[in-house]
Image (cartoon, rainbow, N blue to C red; front, side, top):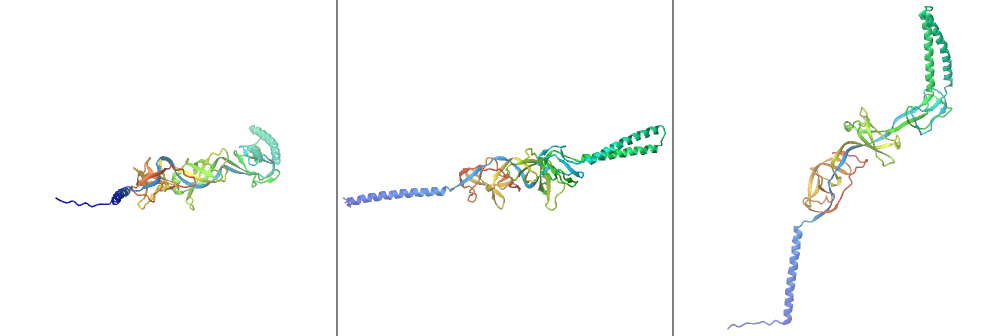
Length: 373
């Protein structure tokens, strides 16, 4: 018969053993949870928080920019055609005048006296010519005698016509409707054909003259649309090209171009400095992205798009470029989601967290030039 040996454990020691076992089990469970969390972290790559925009088509104009000067449609310096004393000024400075309106009058009393004298002489000579003609018909005088009388009449009539023309020139008449400028002569002053009375300008329509590089001459034609702005106002005015210079300036390699613009309100003044944009071509359904969305590499250019929540690089071909936006010719389609931020740290396939969906303004400022790539 076998003997069984029993070890007697004190009661207080048995309680400590049970507590120790439970402590070991708790530590083991916590260690398993930490290991599982660490594995999960290693398996799920970190996400990148970015701002994005959804591609939509928009209209864009291929433009070139220049500077120019506003010119009146018509401009004339008003000077007398004959010398004499001014006896009348019939206009107010800076007012509108109509075509054919009398502006100034030069003394014509002497010319009228000469005309009266010649008119009396004409009657006598005309009577003599009639009498000589009757005598010629009955062969009472020779043809030579009649020709002398006729020549005297023709000469006198020519002198009368000359004096009448000089009298007409004593009246300074408006050649076209427009705005008259400052007056440079006064009533009672003696003027000559070199004396300036005033200037008159027709400012509706108004012209804008500017230059364009010779490489664009072939793209600018009569009727090409032009927009321009002037100093002191934020308004944008439109005009159409009506004339292109026939030669290229050899010093600047540019060509002068003129366009006309409506100026019914007469807010545009000749001589004003103008910022001009010329629309060469309009693209109706262009894909535009902000310049900051484009990444330049040795192989070319690309953007990052969000596809299935992950980053994907996309090679692109660009067109019109401004300071703010770039036209995409190849590589993107409408509704594509393009990354705007995080481009320095983004990698192919990284998980994306969209922080903000932006709709940037893609309008082009008139002061910023386009660059065709």
